[in-house]
Structures are given as C-alpha cells and as structure tokens.
Image (cartoon, rainbow, N blue to C red; front, side):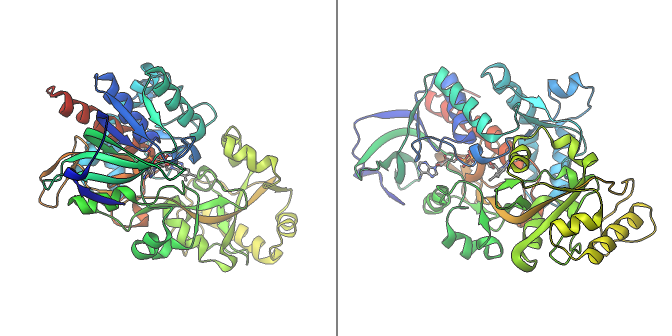
Length: 468
Ligand SMILES: Cc1cc2nc3c(=O)[nH]c(=O)nc-3n(C[C@H](O)[C@H](O)[C@H](O)COP(=O)(O)OP(=O)(O)OC[C@H]3O[C@@H](n4cnc5c(N)ncnc54)[C@H](O)[C@@H]3O)c2cc1C
C-alpha cells in the first residue's frame, strides 16, 4: 500500500470517479456520482461484495423521515445532531454531525424512492442515545438485505463494479492530486486505472491486528465481527497524501454478541430492564450507557463472557429480528420458569443469581441505588418466563479516519482541501469522539450512506465541473 509518483502511472483507461470499496459507502457514492452523469468505476477486493455492511444489522437512523411522519413521530436534524453530540460528549466535529443529521432523512428517502431499498421504521423501543424512534431497516433487519438492495440498485444503473480487485497503490502528484489507482487480481496480475476523483470507501482497520495493537490496544485481542478485508488502507493512503486523520482510538464495540454464534443481541432487552451477569451471577456494569463501551467491560469478566438476562415481555419486540431468530433456532436462548431453574440451566450459582434478581427488583422499586450508576426508574422487574443468552464483547468497526468537510472532501491538517480525494463511512473520521464511549447507535451506516452520497455527488461535480 503506497502512494507513488503520478508520472510513473501507466494506464489504458480512465474514469471520472473511481470508488474503492463496495459496501454501503462505496455503493451510495457510486449511485450518486452516476446519477449526475459521471463515469464511475468501483474496485472491490472480494469476489462478492459484502463489507461490514453485509455483516451488520443494517439499521440507519434518519430524522424527520416520511416514515416517522406517518407514525406521528416528531423529529428533526437538530434533535438528531443534539443526540449524537451528547453521546460523544461534544468531542467530535459538530459541523460534520449537523451535515450528516441534515442529510439523514433525504438520503434514506432517496434510497427508498429512487433506488428501491425497502426501509421500514423500527418501532417498539429506543436505541441507546436516541430520543425518538428513528431507526430505519430493511424488512428482516439484516445488513445482508441492505447490501443486496444497494448492489441491485447499482446493477440497475449499470455501474461497473470490478470485483476481486484489491487496490494496492495510488498515484498522485506532488500536490496530492490522485491520478490513478493500481489494483491486483487473485492471480497476482496488476492493472492500473486513471481517475479524475477518488472516493475512499474501504472502511477502517478492524481487520488489521497490527494497527489495532498500535492504535486501540484495549480491543485488539477481542473477536472482530466486521469485515476482515478492512485493513486500514484508506488511513495509510490518507496519511501519505497528507490528509488530516482524527480519532484513531475510537471504535464501535459491542458488549453482548451471542456466543458462539456471532450475532449481536438487541440492546433493547437491556434498556427495557434486562441486565448482564458474569460467571459469578453478578452484574458488573451500567448496561444502558451504550453497547460500544460495554465491549471492554464484558471481555474483562472471567472467561471473557457474560449472560444477557431478560424475560419473555422484553423478548417480544425483538422476535422479528433475523439475528435473534438465528440464535434461538440454534438453541442459544435458554428459557426457564424460575430464577433457580435458569441458574441451573446456565450453570451459575443459584444464590448469587437470585440475589442479583432481588437487587434489581429493589432498584426498580426505587429502594436501592445501583453501584454501577444505572437507573432502573420506571422499569418493571423481570417476570417469568426468564431468558438468558451467553454473550461476549467484540469489535465491530473502527471509527477514526480521514477528516472530511461537509462535501466529504478530505482535508489537510491546516484545513485546506486535498484536490480530488473524498472519503466516507469507516474510511472517514466518525462522529464518536476519541474513544469507545462515543459511538451512537446506527452511526456507522449513517455516515456510510450520507457521506457516501455526498462524496459521490461532490466528486462527480468536481469532475464534470458543475456548480453545487
Ligand atoms: C455485526 C455488526 C452489526 C452492525 N450493525 C450496524 C447497524 O445496525 N447500524 C449501523 O449503523 N452500523 C452497524 N454496524 C457498523 C456498519 O456495518 C459499518 O459502519 C458500515 O458497514 C461501514 O460501511 P462502509 O461502506 O464504510 O464499509 P464496508 O461495508 O466494510 O465496505 C468496505 C469495502 O471495502 C472493501 N475494501 C477494503 N479495502 C479494499 C481495497 N484495498 N481494495 C478494494 N476493496 C477494498 C471491502 O472488501 C469492503 O467490501 C455493524 C457492524 C457489525 C460488524
């Protein structure tokens, strides 16, 4: 992975907008650029593009969407921006947060109306940090379904996606203008394609253990459930081109991934009154801060696992989620009529688990303070039948990356723009601030589709020289 001198590039064909990566960011960028009349080519390392997008739950927050309005939900870009900034403790780029929030509903509606993505509103519970229902997902709530819909949309526009094409080197002028990209094929042969603008949509460095050990050691040894092909190429090219990089210690973790299945447990069961216990049957954290910061807490427990404890009432809203149905079908959901029966089933000390249930019931009644700082106000204690799923903590994707402006164009540390480089999704700086605690539910795909669309639009306008 290198940036080579522009004069060394030898290529026989060239496009207006070249996109590296065919996940949500790359595909929305390609759709937007092609719609404006630019000639677009997407390079994707895999034979069949999935990305982290295809492994995700596929939920995207959007504020003020027509689906929200149809259900009488009042929301606005300002309210979404305020929720995101609160989660990141204000330690992120407020301008990008406002840009993304403003673009959220128009982007989701554009994907629905122009490109046939079948979003519906997720109802019944609030995700951590969200003040209203605003998650939009495809019918089965899977990222695979979202990824397939985006690939179908790209197919409808006849966008060229070159698969099994690992981008290895960029060619650039001394001023940082990218003129071509070299990519290799599985047989080792290399090809070069010229471009007028480049969109980096190849996500972060979750698949690169060396970068993780250097930049985010606390999560480096946890399981990684994102796309292993995301090796930090955008960040390394960006660094060589002189782009500003920020928040490289930031990531989306998840503190309750059903093990050994690898499916994230829906956080709603915890927010609504469930809790996590370790192998001693004891709670160990404030579960409702958010799922990202919980990852380290869970992997710090003996055996690096915990049990996600809830009941049939809390289970009802998540029964339609494919991820959960899979875990249940594989026998991962343990059910029992009494706490003692549950403890025996999952091999926890009966006395300890009964004591934890009793303490939570006291906290729900306002008779006890939680030593971990969680409020159980307005929550009802769990009622039989009870459920338990064994979970671990995992890394989903990294959040740090190339600093971009509100056109998704890459910036240098002095705030000036690199001439023709754009980035979005996991390749760009996210909205989470510097660490694990700032990740806002849905922030990954939100920046993928909004910055992806902005990057494609801006790149096309630059190459076609059309005004904004
Ligand atoms: C289990 C799980 C659940 C999640 N659930 C959600 C959710 O519900 N909502 C949400 O907002 N976020 C969620 N996320 C996060 C979300 O998946 C990511 O933030 C998002 O998919 C990033 O999109 P992207 O397009 O930037 O990257 P990706 O979708 O990963 O796409 C990057 C593409 O670039 C390709 N690539 C990489 N390097 C190269 C190269 N050198 N040359 C060519 N191609 C290359 C990769 O093969 C890949 O296809 C989840 C993540 C996981 C793991």
